[in-house]
Length: 120
Image (cartoon, rainbow, N blue to C red; front, side):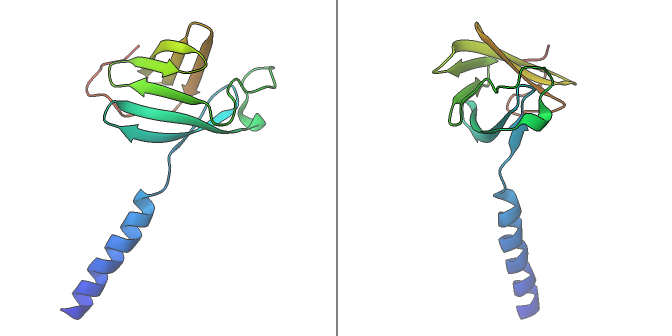
């Protein structure tokens, strides 16, 4: 019985550590975003620029470190810097669009909405 308890405790401890790992998203503009899900959708926070993944000739990331993009469960988006926008997804990734900025996350999924809502 004690051996079984120890195994269960180890699964809980190591399982919690794996669950605590943060998800990161990489944009084509060269930004790395952390991800935090909440009841309204998710918060994407720019945590660092990376030049290795740029898909364009522009060598400057579009977001500053600490900039936040909110993506909602109803395909809405918001940024203090860029205002109100929207987001959509397809099998090729997802895109967040504002009047003055488009952030593409190719080959990545964001699972915050049920069914086909927000699908391109």
